[in-house]
Image (cartoon, rainbow, N blue to C red; front, side, top):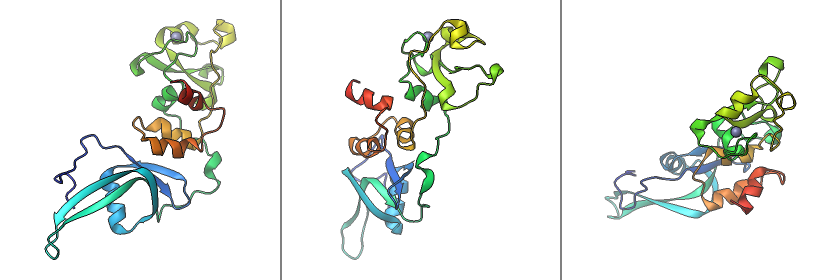
Length: 204
Ligand SMILES: [Zn+2]
């Protein structure tokens, strides 16, 4: 299969959402990896409104060009089915933290670019504050500097929003900036009602 030379090319291809056979999100994968899964028969089922047609070589037997249709959400056989992990806490990654907070500084409320944001410990590390979702907020550099090694109360810098632990479904959304509408719909079904992502979906 030649995916780069077919008549239909995806210059900036979106990612395919890979689930385990139980329907739980596992990874974002590229079109090529997804195509390999289809060819190997590793796709248990697929869904989604988006279909991607990849064209391969011309078959000598039929004289026709081979085609493979991928859908935007695929459930893979062989992925270990995740059972009790729905409450598992996603690993804290700075970019995900900033996405969770919609790039808004928790202290001044300004919206900043990634490079101007810092991961700020609400309870400072020197006072036992840990690297966990509920103790981290996005803060601009001046606010981070001003707050220093103090609690919000000591610094008289109250938090404008409460840090929270994203669900695994939410973590999948935060990891990918180019989510297709059908993938978003699938993932949002697993996002808790109180998530900031839900508010964002209503008023972007
Ligand atoms: Zn700030």
